Length: 212
Figure 1: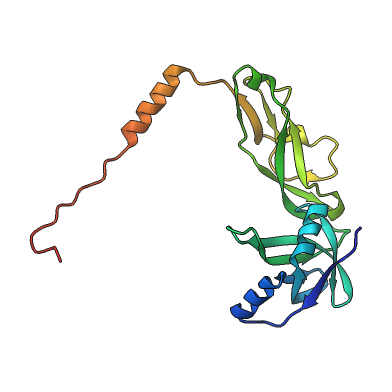
Figure 2 (figure 1 turned 90 degrees about the vertical axis):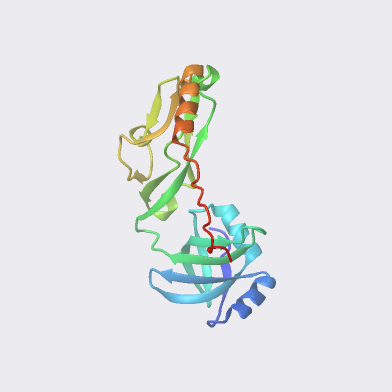
């Protein structure tokens, strides 16, 4: 495992002080969980981003808290929608020998036979719930769709073989399917149905004496 992410303990501070920390390139954070009291800390944003790049969203790594190295995962973080800068992070202290339940993203790979024939790729499931020891949690799950033809699908049951983790979703849940392209008649019928459901806004006439 790489060098531990360094942190500094901090006291509860007003928003103005937190803004100052962010301007200095620090991320106000909290660490809590296994054998760890909830502790307010700060970490360097550049170091946190590097850790995420190295270990992924679900990866375990070391966090140095007051000289004590703790196994943690990034439980949650908030970023500014405009600048993308990380504004807050939550670190979950973990036991590396115990299983955890986390959400893992599904990535589709390849171009399906059905798509080449004009079919439409549909992905009803974008992430799954996985149970595993921290070292066995995947960053994401790749699902190869290249052999799927029109009308065929991949379900959760198809993803279980050989995995070091347990997928907690039901076997019959559909991950991806290739549907037939809609005909012109179906598209026209859909347009007509949408138009029939459109409700004109009600116009309320002002009565004399109601105007200001």
